[in-house]
Image (cartoon, rainbow, N blue to C red; front, top):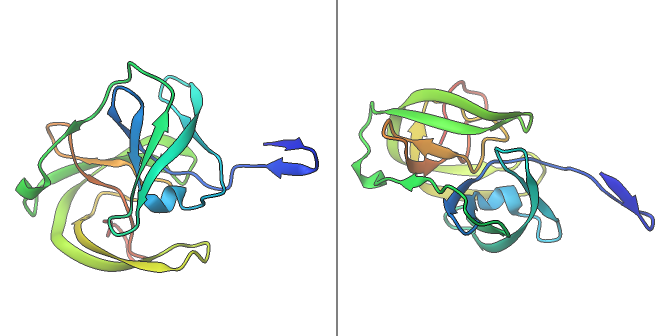
Length: 171
């Protein structure tokens, strides 16, 4: 947060992402970086923080690709989401509530190919999301964009949404 020439910048939200390329590509949800006029900063696990550019936003899949000017990063291993089974154990990682970084929760795959209408809490409208993985692993605000892992540590999904008025129904 700082002031410059009568304007003020401040943190207005938080989400999660994960490195998919050692050259600084990061995957997150589109709704995490929906504000095209905002500046985005990535906080890395080693404590470093760096500006990020949004390279692309996919509103149909609710995905976004960011780029940071840092190399030598360790990228996640991507798994095969077509091989997921109901009852399979999964691990969700995220920045729960925008306050608790690297929060890990464990659950099972409760359903596959779910379709939901997701709406943002800030009046950002709603959108239909399709072909989602349903899990009872805790997905909290701030977890959006985090990886959903299988027990081999491979990313098989991305934390996207939670059912309002329910407990432990996440997508």
